[in-house]
Image 1 (cartoon, one colour):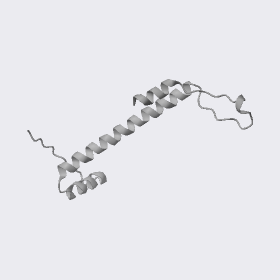
Image 2 (cartoon, rainbow, N blue to C red):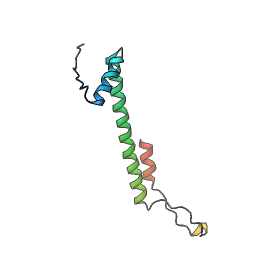
Image 3 (tube, rainbow, N blue to C red):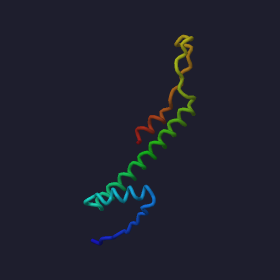
Image 4 (cartoon, one colour):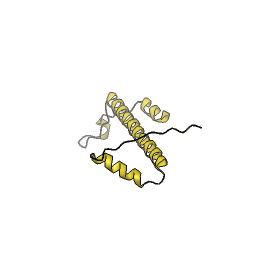
Length: 96
């Protein structure tokens, strides 16, 4: 199994570079630390991205079916307009 190396350079004039350099310098197992940090960062970024897509899709689906109405306090329950959410929305959640 081959081992690959990557050289990193940090400009100590830049605050972020100096902070990261100090963090990495303090680590005993630098490679393991970088691997975990990068994978964690990518995983969180991807998770947030998917969440925003789902939120936007749900908003659009609710808007397309006329929104969600709240019971009007001044009217009787029978006179309120009630919108039903299409089954497609629930199917979408089942498929996630």
